[in-house]
Length: 189
Ligand SMILES: [Zn+2]
Image (cartoon, rainbow, N blue to C red):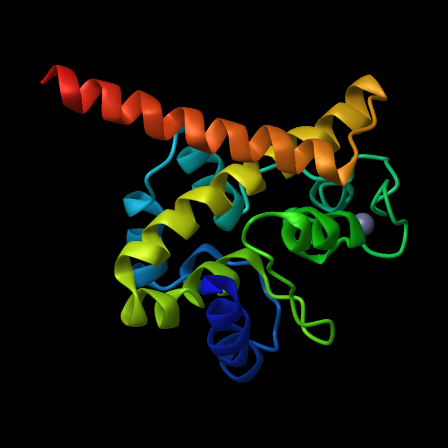
């Protein structure tokens, strides 16, 4: 249900407020989005990954191609789009299956796939309406992003194929495990 809210309010925000230039520039990301990333309750490596993904510090097929690395910039899953981090995490049909099948039941608008930082910024609506739910959901989403990223790397470098359900299962379990770990630390304090 939370994600119905996210799907409706947040996606409206994406559709109306998104930059049409689609330039990937560090300074196009508002401070509020950087602050939100730093506030995610997640593992440090995941936080760092999302930060670098927004700052264009992650090597993807498209990124390497643009730096004159002689590789096919197309997504190795769907082959229909350039393999940017935004595509891997949000735009790819594989990512759609993961998001929709997860406990978030999130479905990106088909006519406007947001850039990652736009999508992160779009959570403002949910944070305004239900901060606790937004925090939990944002944390869960960070794990889904991380395992979507691991799965594409496994495909590219290890020729290992993850199914969408495997990504969902591992990511949701890692999220729950992280909560228990944090709670255990709190209990010992
Ligand atoms: Zn794809």
